[in-house]
Amino acid sequence: MFQIEEELKKLPNKPGVYVMRDKEDNIIYVGKAISLKNRVRQYFRKNDKTARIIKMVSLIDHFEYIVVDNEAEALILECNLIKKNRPKFNVLLKDDKTYPYIKVDLSSDYPTVSITRRIIKDGSKYFGPYANPGSAKEMVNFIKEKYKIRQCKTLKDRTRPCLNYHIGKCLAPCMKYVSKEEYRKQIDEIMNLLEGKTEQLQKELEQEMQEASQKLDFEKAAYIRDKIQAIERVSAKQKVSNLSENDIDVIGIAKSDLEMCIEIFFVRGSKMIGREHYFYTDLKDMEDQEILAGFIKQYYFDNPNIPNKIMIKEEIEDKEAIEKWLSTILGKKVEIKTPKKGEKLRFVEMAENNAKVTLENKEKDKSEILMELKQVLNLEKLPRKIETYDISNLAGEYTVAGMCVMQDGVIKKNLSRRFKIKTVYGQDDPRCMEEVIIRRLRHSIENPRGGFGELPDVIFADGGITQIRAVKNAIQKVKEELNKTEINIPVFGMVKNDKHQTRALMDDTRKELEISQNLKNVITNFQDTVHDTAICYHRKLRDKQITKSALDEIVGIGEAKKQALLKHFGSVERIKSATIKELMQVKGISEDLAKKILGNEA
Image (cartoon, rainbow, N blue to C red):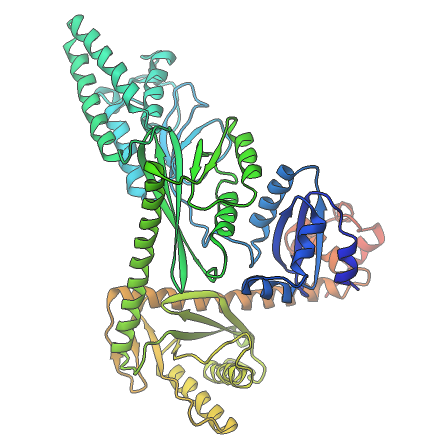
C-alpha cells in the first residue's frame, strides 16, 4: 500500500517530473522541479496554499516521479505529459481548436503557398497563426494576385501551359518557362512579406522598377509599381507600434469572477500580423505568474513560430529554464521580458485591455442569453444553472442516461454526469428519465456539497411533452418522498426540427416558445453535448460487454493480456480470425494460450 509520508522520505534531491494520481489512478497533476525532494514535499506540508491546491492535494492517492539530468529535460518531459494526459489541475488550453497558418512548401523546387491547419516537419515554412481565417485567406489571395506562383497541387510535365499562365498569373514552371532561381526570388519576397519585413522588400522592388524603366521595359515597371502599392496597403493595415524588435509575442490577461481570458498579439517587424485568445474557467484563485508560466510552456510546445521575444506583465517562475528551452528550439536567443515603462509597457497594457474587452463582450453575450431565457420562460430569477438529460439505448439494451450542465450561459463539461439505468427493463425512455431525475435530485438534497452541487434553476428535457411530464413526475415524487415541498424546478422541452437543430422550447402545456437564433444555436449545442455524453457512455458499456464475453472467460487472459491483444489486432473479431502464429506475436501469448483463444466460442 502506498504511504505518502514514507514515499516523501524517499524523494531524491534531483531534477525531474512528478505525477500526482487519484485513487482511480487518473493523473490529476503534472509538475517539474529542480529538486523533487523539496518541491513535492511542499504540497503536503502546512503552509499557505490556494483553494485549488488544497482541493488537488485532498484527491492525491499516490504519486510517482521521473528523474532527469537537468531542468531543461524536466521541462520538456512535463510538457509532453501534460499534452498527452491533460490533467484536470494543470493549466490547459480550453479547447483543441486549430488556427490556420500560411504554408510555403520549400521542399519543392517551385514552392506553392497555401493555407493549412496542420503543422508537420516537412521542410515547409509556416506563418501565423491567423486567429481570423478570413485574414489568412485574404493574404493568400493577395499573394496569388500579385505574384506569379504556381497554383496547381502537383508539378507535372505538360504539353502546354494551363490557363493561369495565359492570363498572367503563373510563370509556368511545369513547362520550364522560368528558372528555379527566378521563381525562388518571388518566394523570398513572399516570405519577407509574411514576416512583416516590407521596408527592405519595398526598397528592392523600387530599385528593380527603376532598372526596368531605364531599359524601357515599361510593362515590367508598371507591374512592379502595382506590387509596391499593394504591399504598402497591406503594410499600413498591419502597423501598430514603433517597437524596434522584429519578432515579438505580447501576452495579456484579464479576469472576471467567472473566468479569465488570455490574449496574444503577434508582432513581426513592428506590424501586427494576427492575434488570438483563450478562455479559462475555475482559475480565479491562481496567481497570474503561475497561469502565464503554464500557458507559455504549453502554447510554444510543438509551435514552429517562436518569436525572439515574449512580453508579459508579471515575472514568472522558471523564466530562465523556459528561455533556454525556447532558444534551443528556435536556434537563437529567446527572451521573456516584463517591461516596466515606455512603449513596450504600453503594448503589454494594450494586450491586457484587449483581453478585458474580449472577456466583457463574451460575458455580455452570456448575460443576454440568460436575460432572454428569463423573459421567454417567464422565470422569477435568472436561470444560472440549467441541466438537461438524454436517454440512450439499443433496442432496450445497455440503457444509460447523460446529464449536462449550463452554468451562467456556458456548458460545463466537467459537470457532466452519466447514469446506468437500474430499475427499468426494456425500451421505456420516460420511465428511464423519471429514474434518473429522482436519483439526481436525491444527490443534491442528501449531500448538498457533493459532486452534483446545488439543484438546478431549470431542467431542459431532450424532447417534447412526454419527457416534460416524466421529469415533472420525478420532481413530484421526490417532493413527497423527502417532504421537500419547497422544491419547484421549472421544466421545458427542447424541440428539434428536421435537421436535428433546436427550433423552439416547449412548456408543460405544449406551447412552443419562440426564441432568437442566437439562443437556438446555444441550446442546439447544449442538446448535442448531452446527446454525445449519453451515446458515448452507451457505446462504452456495449463495447465493454462485447469484449468481456469474448476474452474474459478465457483462463490465462487477464486485463493486461486482453489490452495487449486488442491494441495489436484492433478488435475481438480480428483476434478470432488470427492464426496461432499471429497471436503469439503479442507479448505474453504462448502457443497453448493462443490455442485456447482460437478454441473459445464465447
